[in-house]
Image (cartoon, rainbow, N blue to C red; front, side, top):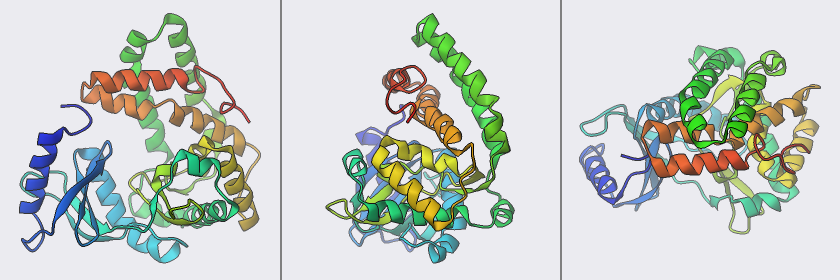
Length: 312
């Protein structure tokens, strides 16, 4: 089995979901999409149902259901609010949950490249509230922190090492390993202030209106953790316009920007643009096509191909 479900697997999962539906009568359901951890279905009555495919999806479900009810009352824009959740059921060992579909459409890179000030200001307001959530409360809720992230990053490097060596040239491999050495020993990340971060703020996880002129909501809270605020700014670097607008508005709101902030954004951007998590998922499922795709993304990343996105 690869990372992504094929048509028969989707059909079997749909049948299983219908059989496990709370109350016993499922509305009309259709395929919506999937990520590494979960598959999504949409119902005729406007529900989005996320079915966890593996432990990654199960973790996302637990975190989302535990945290988003409180965050929804605090945040200035809409977020998914679970209506029901199933921890496990026959054929659904990792559980599922449902929420009312948010308005709008997913932001794309074209939207991000021309994001108006109104969108940037709403993203900044969202981040300002997220980052202001009490750290002690987040820790009490069992959310992972920097120690867990650092351990996972060391594991990520080790797990992908043989595949990277196999697919890259010796020179490319040496560059990548030197980058990992520098990245894992970066004192700026060790010393960064801690806060609650969204953890996956790529454009596709933001909902905008049809013209891309208004931010309507933010999706995917499965990667929330207590680490460095700069981590949330890294994916915004897909668009200099969006990044600069959010950064300026965040400062105006009172967001704390220390002297090493831009350096840390750069390092997190290198990590995220390197497609390391995609590569690990592809190796786990022995998905040759996805491995090749992840390697090509690594070759195009700031680690191996410095560009205008490398340093601004």
